[in-house]
Image (tube, rainbow, N blue to C red; front, side, top):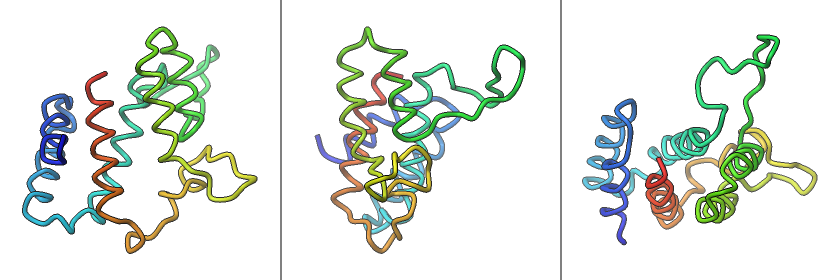
Length: 147
């Protein structure tokens, strides 16, 4: 499946809150494929949203049983939560395992458990490349089917 088809799959499966943004991202990329460095942070935000959407931590005001706001899980911890809460869906869990590649810790002792301790959180756009962006779009398309 090519990147054009991947964008179509995403747009076909996206909820209304993100539809306009994904339609615009698709148009921008079709006209200027070098725009990946501008679109990549947006795609990472949506990837995290899609993973979060599969968990109990979807929404703005997540609170514990005492009503105290809890810190939402991010990166590898979010993937672990999504796997735990969707363990009956083996296919989804296998895909979530594959998505860990997007949350590589920045250093050996780092767990990659926050946005600023994973490679895409600190990598400058000049170091991103088109092939990796298109791989990210492909994986977002694959995950979009579980929405």
